Amino acid sequence: IGYEAVIMAGVHIGDGAIVGTRAVVTKDVPPYTIVGGVPAKEIRKRFSPDIIEQMQALKWWDWSVDKIREFLPYLMNGDLEKIVAMKNR
Image (cartoon, rainbow, N blue to C red):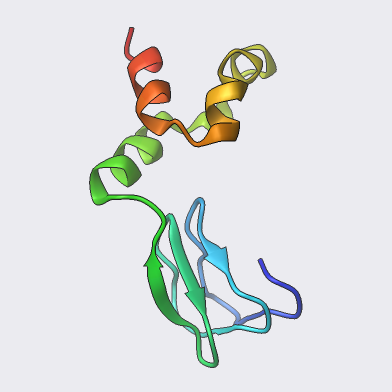
């Protein structure tokens, strides 16, 4: 959530979404979407629809600390394909 962004009551910000500085968000923001402006509008998706679906299924934010440590290099460099491949092994 960017500096001085305003999120109106009842609005849901999806997992992994980015809200730009001073944006005024009046509508729900889908997962892994970048929004900005007044009122906030979609700028672009962070990833392809397939990767977004896979990241939603992974729910890495619910993992144990040990599991996050194991995957940390891939999470930090954005190697989502590697994360999905390792998770499915």
